[in-house]
Length: 380
Image (tube, rainbow, N blue to C red; front, side):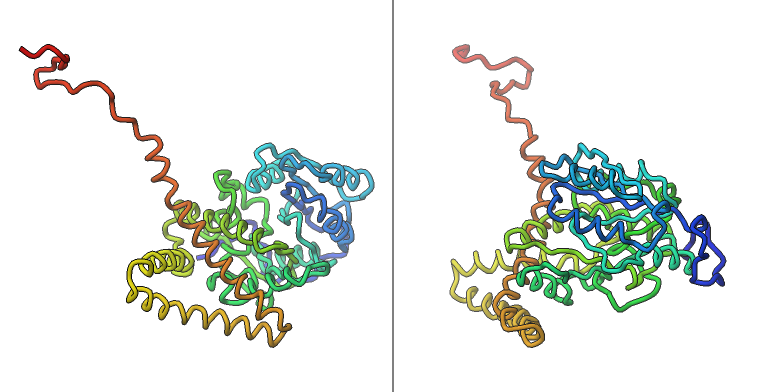
């Protein structure tokens, strides 16, 4: 049964009191590394929020950026009314950056936003406070829209592909932009009451991907109430190249394995799909090299996948333009293969580490049953 931390009156109106002092203090934590190209846009969205500027703060946890990230943050710290802090994150991991921000924060509500995101609504903070008061939720989930001004046509293609049921996990609510209600927060939790961290702990810094998934799953297992609202949607800018997208989803694939290794009960069929797909591809290619019959079987089993990808790509092409017929199949393949390769890379890591650590066979001569060493030339 779901539980709540400091549950308000369920009958309370969703309208917040007009007095600024009655509004909860919000801490916005932004873990970044080399986000100088995107931070100005995000800061503009943050400082334009229709929320009293003395009732929220912006904490940027910087993972040793080598670009203008620190300079940008410090400029906004001087010029903006909301409290803005630059915080060092020497470990560079997003999980560590989140923890750095939480530890330095003062807010009753803590919001996590990535540096390459945009906030489409100027009332996000006010809506967050209203929804959490009205629903009694301890965690607020926000869907992601990955179309935004300034995207290239390739980024828009990635965005639309990822938003389809073939482009992301079917058990995820991350792209549920038309849903309102209580959900499992594992894939989309982003805003929390401070007491949540006292109950479930901080982010696990062993993760360099899926640290939010791990944290949200712990929120779910603790029985806390989590609410998803389209009013809290965030815009996310996709990778600008196929290579960048592939590297990103490989990291996600590795993170999924670490997540399941820590939480075996969270394993789902959809998480195994990309891994099975890559194993099937590799096995089929190898078998096809040694057997004509195996090649025919592999081709026959490959055609349904190709057909499914073409159907989804064609649907995107009809709705958004012919270019999707060309690029969408490559994006689907990059996502599926990248997730699968990341899965197998991480799954096989303990074996490789064991092989490396295995002590080398002793170069000493064998010892006789009596315990005396056999010495060359000692034979009678």
